[in-house]
Image: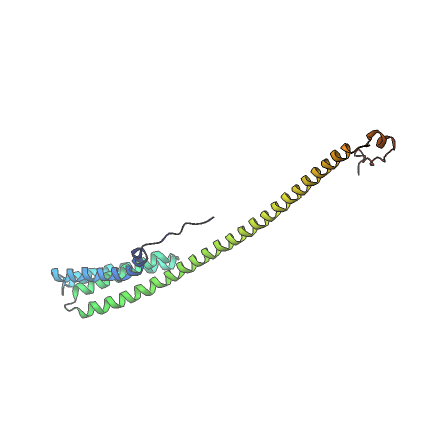
Length: 200
């Protein structure tokens, strides 16, 4: 019933929050490395990245129409990454790639925040459900403990009564002048018998 308390490392908690910035920064760095290795003002390389980005965007759009939101978001993210790397590789200055990096990072955090909110709501609902079940089980356990205690007390009182009756009978039998035959000859009334053979 009691769950172990697990303390997560701060890196485990920070990694999902840093993932969008790490992803867009990696794409920017790779684009600038590509720029330094001959992609600057290369029309062929730029056209290739435009075609790949458009293909990824088209795939994301078709997946969003089918209702597969996670794969559609992945397609859009790939399209944006290809566009950012293409611009970072083609541009001669750093200002435009940095501007697009900031925009891409902001969009990535906006999309991730929506998923983080959904996960947080699901976790809160799960913990509330668990606490309600714990309270319900605790109430049932308390009721059963009270019932068992009452049964034990009834059994104890019955045992005490039987012990007192036996003590009284023994004490009466040891009294001087006690004659059990005199009681039988006095004709004590019998208890009525119940006929169990009759059908109701």
